[in-house]
Image (spheres, rainbow, N blue to C red):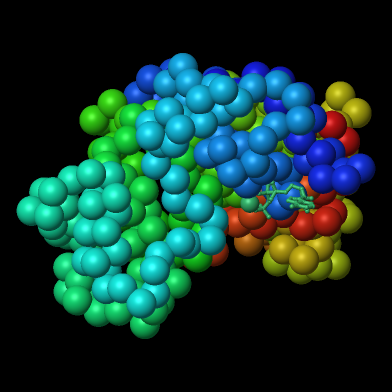
Length: 332
Ligand SMILES: Nc1ncnc2c1ncn2[C@@H]1O[C@H](COP(=O)(O)OP(=O)(O)OP(=O)(O)O)[C@@H](O)[C@H]1O
Ligand SMILES: [Mg+2]
């Protein structure tokens, strides 16, 4: 349904996309995950015919952006990173206008607008000028606009950036129901949690190239073994604790220290058995521990290993770990 074949795009001498290849089957969600400047929006612009590729081709529902841009646009709904709503119109009028542009009669366009206003919790403000809306409301209205005509393919560029937790959940629900209806979605995000939750297939990109792809589970497995994290009570004990972890783990494994969070961590091929040894040794040495855990690799680990730096933490969830520079030195 969505195919990007060996696309390159340069701005002057800067290569924003460098032989990018992507594929999303019908009714699936492809998550394009990458840090700032990795080429996500450039990819979206090429798929939506706003930019043309220097090399390669991209296809939506079989139509090439090079030879059939009109057919591409007809099969596509776009919600951009920067919301494109008409501020002079009300929420209802914005959606109604989009429906009319797609050739719906007044009554059908109005019914569709009202349906979408309800699913995006905008019914109460349907008659308000969208210029007065908060960023999150505008974002939701923009997303609703993208699906007015029930396109086969929807491209969403960072659909939840700037939304509050409720807005993010709403958006995730909408994406899930689109997919349940058979829509194919390409979604860019900097949030691992979002890719993990929504995407059937994830392509991690950096410098305009795919550096890893697979399901969330496959990517996590590729990040290797479980890890032990120990949070110490006293910063002064960090080095001693790191020594304990390294001796307990053996195999020449190195512990990482994160002084900001008083945390030391190490790969744990033996899992919980190592955790037990580490805790009894720390106890024997009277090094007080605040928290200790064994954790499976997360997409964060994958991302860090591949790109050398951390992904963005979701602004509000607190569940995505913010990695410190200390950790960012882990060799690939
Ligand atoms: N019109 C342009 N002229 C020059 N450079 C550009 C242009 N558009 C994008 N770039 C550069 O291309 C690179 C990729 O940009 P792009 O917007 O695709 O990144 P992104 O992955 O969407 O980043 P973000 O997460 O910040 O939205 C960036 O380094 C950007 O500065
Ligand atoms: Mg972008």
